[in-house]
Image 1 (cartoon, rainbow, N blue to C red):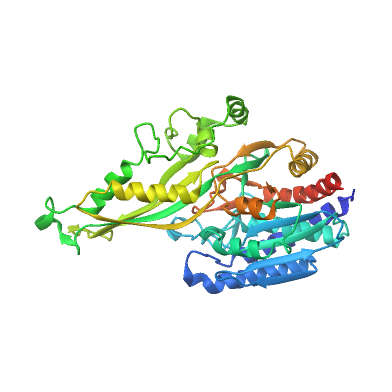
Image 2 (cartoon, rainbow, N blue to C red):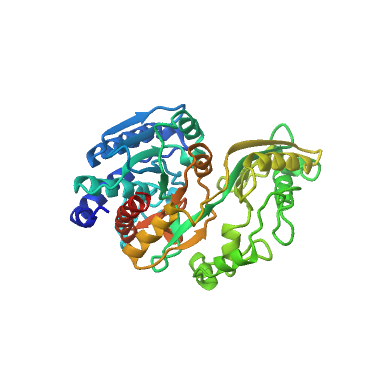
Length: 459
């Protein structure tokens, strides 16, 4: 077993530099959803490659795709040693609305021991922990296994080109486990490892009424208002118990046993604290399930955006021609994103009145994934937390989606360990996204310990 004391000392000696490097990357607005940031996305890809080279990989390359490039790097210490493949993404969510940020989203600031910037927790701060953990091991001659990196630039828009890359590069990506830090923990006092992720079906709907915007006085009451119709259609997608009404929606859902639900309930959680943090009077969701169950083991349907008509300052009495909404459904085993997308499309068109026309456009999707907790891969995570935190991590399921995890399992035939160090309070996808400095540094140390225990268990 490699002694990691030198690697951990290297981290301690280079804390300030590690943070400054992260700050430099966070200044790059690598927003994949908006084409005006294309040059910045490419600049961030170059940054990642350069930092991998500086960290000590033997080979690093920018792999072009039909979209944003994938950064690949590797260091093979011994062909007979086990190999860890690190996955992460350098693209970030749009920062809109900018006016809700306390400081500019791409001008990182340190406040209350947190780094505040778009991408700080999702996923630049988290994947960069792996780069720095690798550097610490490589520069201290304590790397116990082979390491490969695959850092993409399209996770926030569906990872459509990464799937192609994985299928075409199976030999290059051959590994024994995949490490991903793009999830959260229960708390710093109660560390956890995510063992389940939801799938995703994301669509945009358009409802069209008259062939142009109309005067609401002249035509109101005589012509269907697309906004009114869309609101009624959306409202009908759930019943009074917050159960989705799309026929067949729950047919493939794997129901957890009472024992499994009991284990999930044992994880520390405060309903009062949950509501207080969000400034809401009470939680809401599917009847018959707890808040944690709704988040982790039950499928959901939510409207992510809705618009139409006049939304500018002042009044304009218009009956709009069109109304739009973006809708996402988070899925659980064994739901299929393609099947759910087809179900939604058929149902949404069926419930539309004759007075309007409906268009449904699928955007992207992904499959749910579950990691077994009895594998050596997971045992290594337990040992890393036990050594670094003095606690055994709690297995949890998360409401978020990382579509590529299911693809990794299918194509590369290895487990993905979701070694995330974020917190729910980090506000990912929201204004004032942040990542704790404690989590950043402790994450680097824990990743180093994972490598040690993984190599020991595999050898």
